[in-house]
Length: 496
Ligand code: BES
Ligand code: MN
Ligand code: ZN
Image (cartoon, rainbow, N blue to C red; front, side, top):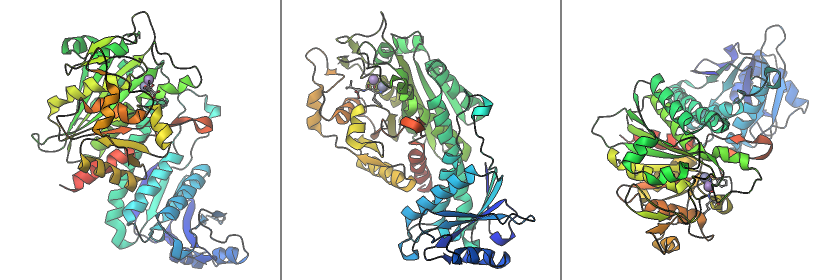
């Protein structure tokens, strides 16, 4: 799908469909009125006939596309006084659904009057492009052609006012890159675990570096990890025929001695639980246990695409957690890369094990900040559901910046406390710590474990177990939290 931003009036558009707003009580917005005049009163006539009240979220298609005149979609915006970011988001969702289901290959959208009073045009463009990107996403690699309904929409023109042009253009480029990054993450997440194993995930990072010259890739294989002493990663991967990988993608968009922002993604390509085997129900969904890593790769793609003036390092720590004669046992003690020892009381708490070695390893980049992203705990879903990621960390400014970026992108994060007192739950009789902290506050004690490896830099942890994929009829990866992370990085770039 190609987007373009123009200040030309929508009345001149030749697109297959022209989308304009109506406010409640059947009142046409300015753009709609202009169009109505050109169409000889068809729009106002339709409203007078009572076809639409203009309720928020409603849509009415008027097929005026006889004799080469494009069809019109009237989007309800609700009462003008009540119009806000929430109703605007709703309208964007309606537009996205409608346009991606229609046969038309092109559409023109009147943007100016969709911008709610509490937001700027850039926000609206971000919201709209994200909604369209989401609605147009298909994962059809493994399906027969006749089974997949393609999206016909190819071209979307965003009509804005002259004074909104620059803002809207920039927002559009950013939003398109974010969509591409999210879709990249979704593709990786949806790929089945027989095809996406640690080496394949590393290979996808190598491919990104081939495509974007500004990305430099480093892949550590099992031998490298042994030499390094990354025994926690190795312990998780030991039960699998597919060896683990630790990958770094370095993007240098700023001065080379500027400290980078480092993103670390959990990349468990399949989580059976290991010897602490998970129950069978919905175990297929544990292919999504690499969505943290996928979001990191999606972000690196978007960062490279936008050529952000920042230094960013994306790290993927990947293993397959399988039960086997060689697999780690409950009771095993491993010496992690940091030198601290861990008693593995439950092999299903493997995410923190692959992450802890990665968190030590990234010290070599002398980071300005480290953010890890992980489908880490079922407890996070119990605490916060599927609406929001959990954010915890050792630096209030970093946490606040992530929360702000989450709100702006509607890919939200909510903070959980990381108080010292919770650390007690990780006590082990035999090692420096256990890898589980019991049932209470499971998302917090998992973060407490990570905190012990992240003491040497500002650090935040995003638990994305609830947001990274959907179950049920719409089962699939969501691409979250690529939008949150990208808004954070865009904020960082803008603050320079
Ligand atoms: N990958 C899971 C977390 C998870 C569970 C994500 C369900 C999404 C949906 C993680 O490796 C795990 O198994 N965590 C355990 C930790 C426990 C053993 C302390 C969990 O949450 O049950
Ligand atoms: Mn697990
Ligand atoms: Zn896991």
